[in-house]
Image (cartoon, rainbow, N blue to C red):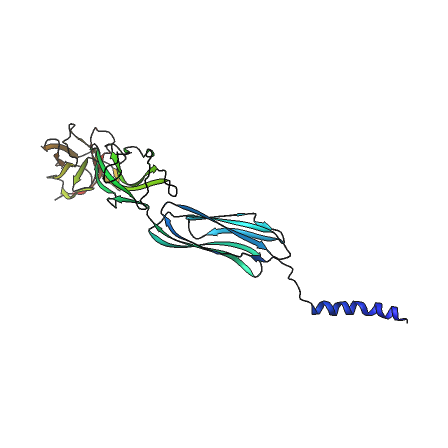
Length: 344
């Protein structure tokens, strides 16, 4: 065998030995981000800040990034592209909405990866939030609104950074409520919120949104919580219980109906009976209850007399008394009836 044949046989072994001694590059994606934190410092409530983070693929296989999540609705994350070729880059855009506070906020973006060494790539963002617009009163709580009684409340506005702000027209509110900026006085601008007297009864939280020209927070948002009540209220309310009624004598119960508005009513309420005696919630006998309203203070208070007539037929009392007022938006006032007839 000549020396050339011997060398040919030894060459693969020598190459293998050389490769075994050299460092190996992993054959998979490798995710890398040089920066993974951002402290925004002080943010005004209502301000939006953005930060971009660069993500690289330093491996030899396609890097897939999915899903992209955050632990707060105030932090929105976008990633483009979600697949990175070896040696390529992508950008994570983090949008921090300072919609809570005043508070210290620490939030996180998490991105799933197919890098076997990094299941989740994370980015941590923090901020101190504080209000730019300060209100007087500090809590706009308006619990005493009554249908038919217009009312208004003034809110003094101050800008914390001392800048001079121009205010636009407030956005339209839900039916029954309006808002307007008044002429600025020595104490600063005033926002007037009005209840027009007609709205859906119940508790609500509305936000008065006023556009401004402030460069960092371009709108003023004033929360107003309120309770709108019907004009009429019953005392006692809800249930009118006759208890055990002797069939021979019948029974009478009284309820006071009051108007809680400021001005007396010009229309008189009416009452109707939707009830009778029956079994298992079903009316079996004709209505044996009568009801009348008598004004004790005209326009302000009435006495409701409910009577079970002597000799009524049936067993359990089923139904309700309904007091109605012919006024805009006024819901009916309902009293549930209860009671049982018995023979002495």
